[in-house]
Amino acid sequence: MRTIFLLLAIVGAIVPMFYFVSWFNEFGWSLGAMVEAWNVNDATTGLVYDLTIAAVALTLFVIWETVQNRRWINLLAIPATFCIGVSCGLPLYFWLRSR
Image 1 (cartoon, rainbow, N blue to C red):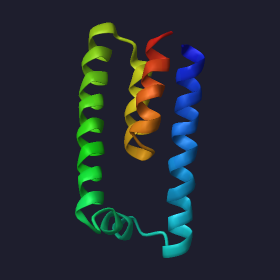
Image 2 (image 1 turned 180 degrees about the vertical axis):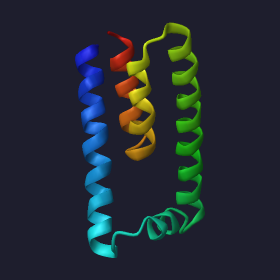
Image 3 (image 1 turned 90 degrees about the horizontal axis):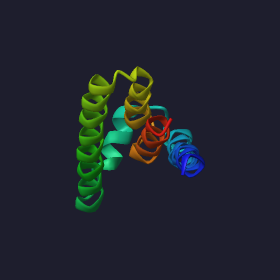
Image 4 (image 1 turned 135 degrees about the vertical axis):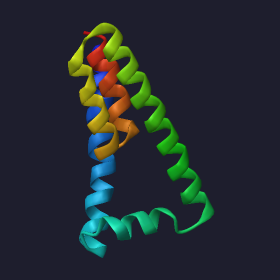
């Protein structure tokens, strides 16, 4: 399972970043413009809220479990989640946790 979690974390980093970089190359490197694009209609806005709530839940769990177990390396899942996405942060956390 560790290998699968690591592969999912890698794929979960590459796929979203491919689309993010493609979008930035086409529309300019403006984070504000990207946030506007995320809210272009109700479907995308719902997806943004869905992923944001999942990211916050994952973050709280990572912090809670890290404090309990004192495995500070697991905190790496938090910047991965907010800088790349839940598709990277969650499997990365599972991989780190399974050590």
